[in-house]
Length: 311
Image (cartoon, rainbow, N blue to C red):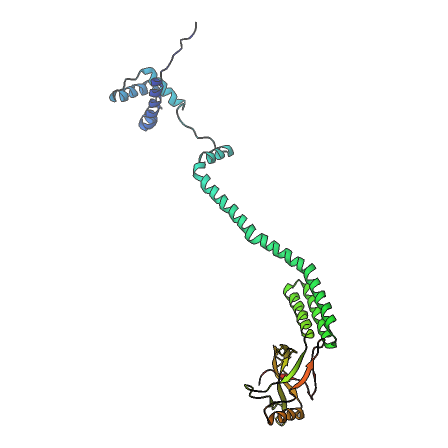
């Protein structure tokens, strides 16, 4: 004989769930009744009174089903035991809270890395590559070329010695990885070559606007002596002033200038002074000349050597 099938309506199930909820929230009932004999009947009776007071008609079968469901924890949620899977599931479920800030943070980090690569790393790498290429290719070639061209333009042993010194300076800088110092050595060679290429006359200044053509100095360490200087300038064949390198014998200061005080003998000084005295014109104003290929001028009057930059 087949056992009768009991079909419970949705209302019965909902009422049973309500019974369980009622029992769960009635702590006094649970504490007092569930630990006593015959608790099921007493609970059913008590529940019947509760629902009757609320005007709800509940059958004993539904009440018994609710009590059994409570004892079986059928409608009670039991949290899952902690595990990696549970943790990942909770993280996934809460993604609406953390995903957008996390995505924004990731996007900011990616953008920062990209900007750093574009703005810092790539320019630094490009700079390093340029420096490496300069030190291994460009600068050595420029240095050798400048040295060779300088020697080709020179007929002066002094100029050759300076060119050799600049070459060593450049080679030492390249070996040390010092681009700036290597470029300076090349610039020095280029300037030396330019100085060798020009020609000029050394002319004593005179005429309107020129208060003096010469001066004398009394050395501090020789109060009874005098050093005589003619104020001169360098003039090229076209009449243009030329800047040349002059070192002052007073303080060893070096400048490029078109005018300086050239030290001469007392006799030469007096000769120029006498030439100017009669009509304020110096007939023999040119006292020296520097041809192309040489570094220093040759003088036609006695010059002990030495110069000054201030007077």
